[in-house]
Image 1 (spheres, rainbow, N blue to C red):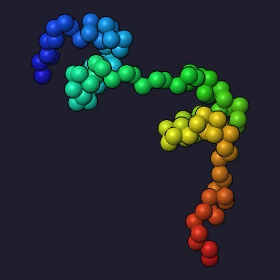
Image 2 (image 1 turned 120 degrees about the vertical axis):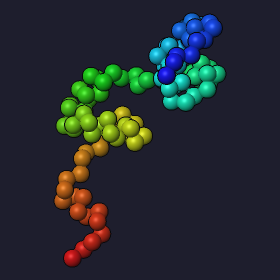
Image 3 (image 1 turned 90 degrees about the vertical axis):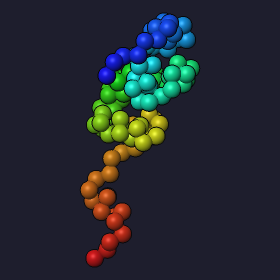
Length: 99
């Protein structure tokens, strides 16, 4: 597949609008229009770096992957770190299948 030529080049357009060129290219690969790719502000990243979230998870006795999965589901960092993981016996009570 041939690359499209843009005038001015996308890197210049992105820089002028304060967006990283890689963000624009990724958006175009996902099917965004050129206008939307250039004019939609980037999603702000988490204020805490991955290593800091990992340290918080470990300090709380949780696996970092558990905290990350919870945050992907929309949990706040505070809730993701402070909520204990249910044990298998605690989860059995959620089945509502009493025998």
